[in-house]
Length: 429
Image (cartoon, rainbow, N blue to C red; front, side, top):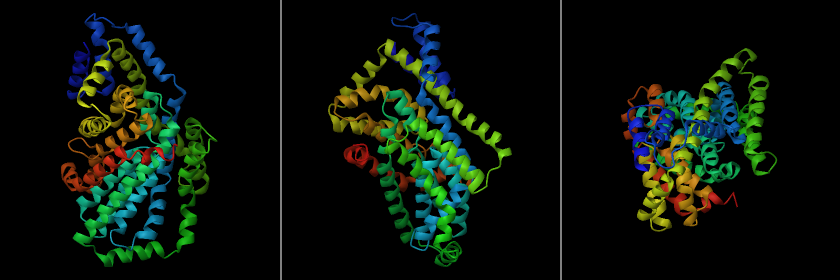
């Protein structure tokens, strides 16, 4: 029966049905077949309401709303100018400034696609104007956008934490060093690419002079409130002043204050529209979490999780082989499935296996999220490829080919994160 449930789920997924419908289809299969362990429709509905009735679920819509406010407030441009001031006149400096901006912006948006869209809309045309190849510019933003799901506050970390009952605060702290590691390796490739292919130094220097003309202190003053955002959110959680849910509420008030009264880039009349935008983004995720709870209970009742765990443990006989299986499986899964559903469905199944091998659930969560971040740029369905395609005018597959070296260094980072757990656990401990 477990095999049939998964078959129905993946067939519906392949046919293009929404992920929620795929989970409902899988959940009602045992009931339709009158199988042993099948639950009732009423029990499935109760399971869905139980999944939605979680205090932690408030993190998602609140952080999403804060991200929408900050994006509308033009925060990305202020961040980019600060980083371009320091590295913009060096070899590979402008692509590196893009990567660093994505790293910081991830602490505002909590989304890979949102990071790629906000940073790409501003920087891809600029990079092309400065003489960089359009495919390279789009690939740089597409891959760097993946940092948006690694750097906290991260939507996937919240979903993994709720699905596996792992501390969301610990996951947030664990994502910081891996995110920095990935960013450093991406910058290493960007500099190498620019050294090999060359740059238009005259255009780059002219652009740098425009950025530096006002001086550092005025630039820092203008960007101060944008740079302070992740410090307030993560500092509050790390210091134990606020919980992740409370930090999400703080981030909304902070975003409102900065956008309305400091930068004055958002008006009160604009707020209802921005709120609707945030609700449209958050509602599907909240429904997904609710129905994932019901789907997970169905899998538990028919012992599907035990079957999958036994199958994995047959292949992965020790800690090293298990981590390699996770990396390969999630790399392939990221090509065809969105980050959230993969974490919600497979996280609770893999966590007990990881713990049996002495792997901390926080470390596993970081590895899974970083792994799925690569899926944002892997053909054929990498979401960030389509986001940057619409901005650059290049075809998604063409951008995907240019992104292959970036993906290569991302994979190197994955193996470091997997086999050097200190990157994930140092700040948590």
